[in-house]
Length: 296
Ligand SMILES: NC(=O)c1ccc[n+]([C@@H]2O[C@H](COP(=O)([O-])OP(=O)(O)OC[C@H]3O[C@@H](n4cnc5c(N)ncnc54)[C@H](OP(=O)(O)O)[C@@H]3O)[C@@H](O)[C@H]2O)c1
Image 1 (cartoon, protein in one colour):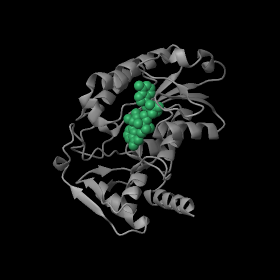
Image 2 (cartoon, rainbow, N blue to C red):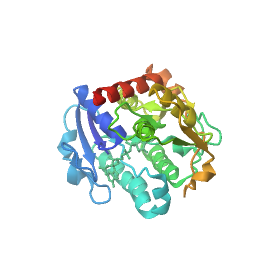
Image 3 (cartoon, rainbow, N blue to C red):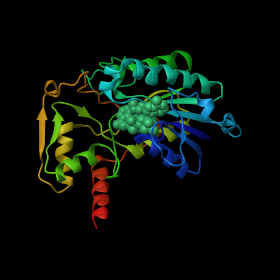
Image 4 (cartoon, rainbow, N blue to C red):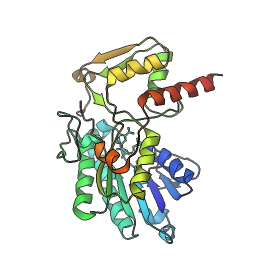
């Protein structure tokens, strides 16, 4: 089993690459603008995958997986720079999918809960997609392409990923920096999320590939929180008095829409794989343990 991870300099891709290699499996990771040692440079807007990765990587003992983590994830940029964002998130991703199809590799597309508009919430894989912003529409377009053309593809929909490393960029590291600077955590009122440990997402992707799963799976922690409640719990875990401000979404003046309740029902994946997810409390504890280690 071999993996090509496209977008391995990003949050999920980085953890996926580390997990795959920790299992002794062969993997190549790509980056676009980052300069992480050991990653190949592959920019969807400039290169074809065959220019950067030798086809011979996918010779020998299969199966072969190409995990697509590459994305322009800035939701407002997807609206304000629509040509570039659509090119990266849709057109060039589809070109990549077609290129690796000729290599006999299975695409694993990392999609998003934003394929739903968040009016209903707790979505299953059976719910029809209903994206409310450009980013969600891009993801839904690629999902639809895969469902029509590559039925053995795997589509993973994560919700908000969280980490335990204070040096990485995610909710907890951002919130900890704000709190230590004496600033409040400002949250969108009424937003529900299933914060999922990034290493669980990495583990789940590999597990799904090992089991030969195809089709759509929601890969999420079964716990879900209002964003402001999660922030409050984080303050408690950090030993600080809660400093959380909740504002209606209209106060943020986002150029594009945000989903309020795009949290997912992940029971299909858990039932199929038996995978247990790390609780948010454990992730917070690990995060604080690492903070203390850094401070001593
Ligand atoms: N993180 C979450 O909470 C979350 C939640 C739901 C869904 N997802 C989905 O999960 C996937 C991974 O998310 P993430 O958080 O790891 O994203 P991320 O941290 O923003 O990383 C994005 C990756 O895409 C690469 N990339 C950007 N533009 C590119 C281009 N033109 N050509 C090739 N690569 C390009 C980046 O490379 P450089 O940095 O080197 O430029 C980086 O490796 C995405 O599809 C995202 O939609 C993530």
